[in-house]
Image 1 (tube, rainbow, N blue to C red):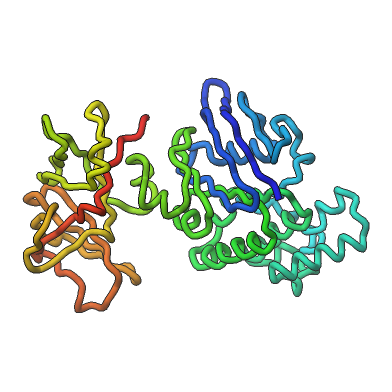
Image 2 (cartoon, rainbow, N blue to C red; image 1 turned 90 degrees about the horizontal axis):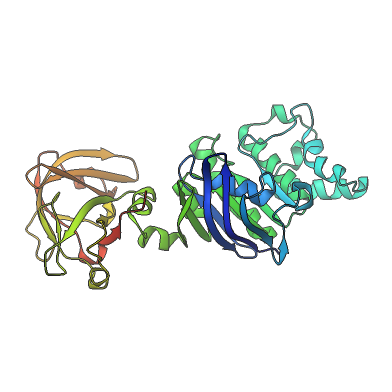
Length: 361
């Protein structure tokens, strides 16, 4: 298995810096995801690992081997593109076998390896079919098989599920993860989809405007965001600016008209020279029709209720209607849904309030 090390990587296109001073180590056999909005540098980073781009500065290493300026065909990486890049005039067998034939593998070995990988992606019955006759999900499996059949050291996937419908994306997430675990191959996955990143990854690197904002496990990224960008981009959150009361560690939120009580260890790290925000996830907020005791309690009025199937979102006006909080609960039946116009109590549990710095722009 192969580890990937990116050391102080910067990539410039003219006056534009696409990736800036990036340092990442991806472990052997790890499923590592680059996550971020469009134009944040994640695909550029993937292409530098593949060898399609060379970094302006910095080094790319596979284990201890410097691969910074090695050509793509000498890196032994398997790549799956967003548009699959299949040959429509070829059969499934011919598409999957293409990389092996380029490497001049003998016919018997080609046949064995192609049949083996098609068995693993559940496409062996379609071996002689034209890829143009396959569904989107089946074409995605062909692209995966073609990348895996060459037995690459590293599997690279660039938003491979973005062209599929929601149900098929769910199925293919599980399929890709199953194959990655079965092969034990170091895998680097690019996506802007938070659900894909959270459900599939061992670790995630969150990108924004060419900078890596945070690296961590899915639970670390979600529960312990390092700044307001990560908190807002990963999942959903209620995010409001907070200020420190003069001469004390107390935090005040103007939007909520609330003296905020948060985890004391976070408060002690509060730097009065920086801007900070409080982040509270919608599912962490407590609501009650009767008065609540404790800290961070507000009175609100239900403004809107959205039913999504598995969950129910309630938008609650607080601070005399000037601010809206989003609250999420599992669907427990119509009798539990809040009614618009209903007055109730809302609590932001202190152990669920995360104080985060404002990200540098």
